[in-house]
Length: 157
Image 1 (cartoon, rainbow, N blue to C red):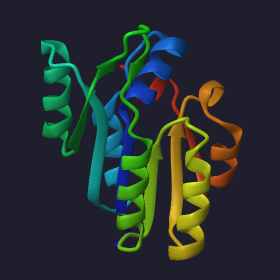
Image 2 (image 1 turned 30 degrees about the vertical axis):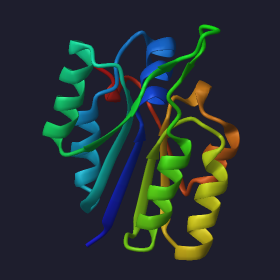
Image 3 (image 1 turned 180 degrees about the vertical axis):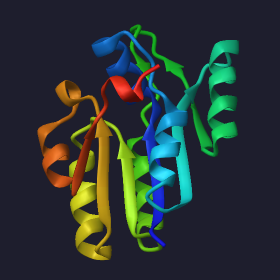
Image 4 (image 1 turned 45 degrees about the vertical axis):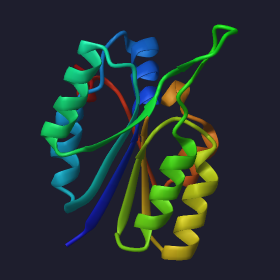
């Protein structure tokens, strides 16, 4: 049985689907699709915590589907910019999990993860898959993954 780990960069998926399609991502449909490929042994969704009701409802929905939701506080800087980046946390979790699974699935368009995928493929001989909005996913991430799944109409609400 194919053991699968899923890692979702929630902010990246939210903004890329919103900006490209003006729609939200369908996590339930994703879960169903991936579960047909094997056993999901790890599923982490990384998000920022603002504490608003709509966001809490979304996080509870992710938990109900089967995701472990990892939260980092949303930080508003004095210059108006915001911080809530999970890249290092995602990287650590992928590195710790990759040795115990057959497939790592990453949902993000962030090109910084290309090096991570190269590393786990080399060190652990795992299959890597990426889900991302094609126009907003870094080319090196698309090329590095064994399989790239474009987020399009069938994965949108």
